[in-house]
Length: 314
Image 1: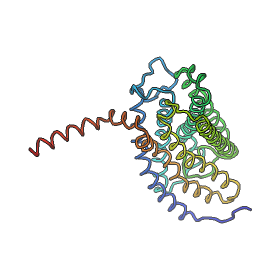
Image 2: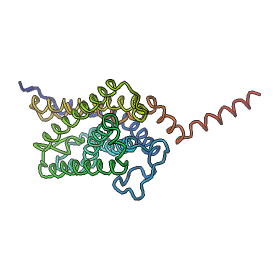
Image 3: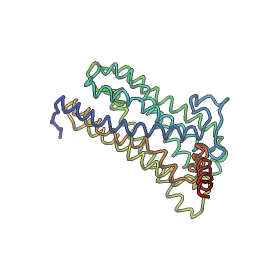
Image 4: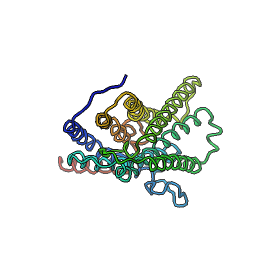
């Protein structure tokens, strides 16, 4: 049954303004946290993920394949948040723009989103191989696996940008990442993204079953098990649920303006996912916490403050 309700233009822009402020706050937190994860893990901040001739890790402990993929995911999330600045401006200026122009503005962020989706799938697959096929997993070189993951992500992201280019329209939209794609391309994009997230869920269910069934401790996996699974849960409740709701909106909502308003309301779920990585890894992983504190010099600062405090109280 189609939802035939409509929304006024004033109400639409009020919703956009309210949620743009919420999203902007979460965006700032996300940018800072994700940049710390990237800088803690990699020297080159993954600006050239396919060029491994100059590739170096910063942390001696965060050199595993999974750690590097997590850093790449954080880098993609940082790029994705850039569109938030445009969205805030368009919301308060009450300025809808042609979708063809939004395609040009938001495509880098949409590409980063598509890249991130494949990287998350690659992380899940790598964790599955490490638990179910440990011998085969040890034979895979980190640089080779990361390179393959990045190539697949690039092909996936480029494919949808090319498809989106041939389906641009001149209809007015408020420019957010989902409207870098429209029409048939948007439908295909949302459905495919949803099923990729379902694939991630299935892989982690297989991992949990394997660990429970084995009754053995796998050190390499359990080092980041808690933090990674927590982050995946946040990711799935963020992105997977968003894609699922997007499918329902496309099927049941008739009014284009109401459709845009509902997609805007989903924004906090997206930005919760983007801004959560730092907190999940810092508070759920001892290894990440130690390396982040070392990178930021927190332990040294605490030691200096203690010395100064003790000296002052004598």
